[in-house]
Length: 124
Image: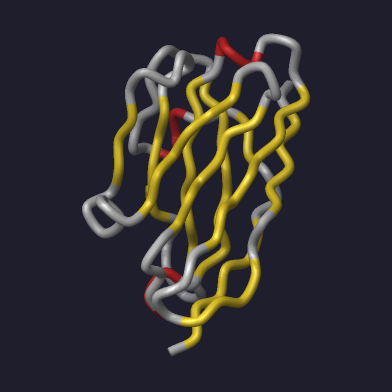
């Protein structure tokens, strides 16, 4: 079982930046691919970004490509999501997730462990 704790959310103006962190409590963090998902009120949870367990491969939703960057530090058991040029439509609760696999996927159903989420609000 992997426990995940997100942090770094908050309120930011449009065009601003935030960096989310997700700390994992597991000895074998480098055995897990990681993903970020988000859910806005009244919508389904959607894929944002994923990173392979080594960090060598990443994937992004089209809506965030070029603005968001996912990275990980396996020595610190932490995955990050750097979010730049934030827009009001990025407002959501952001969740990190862990998948016991080499590569992260876009499907939330391939992730076995989830954090509680952190709120990101972008004002116009």
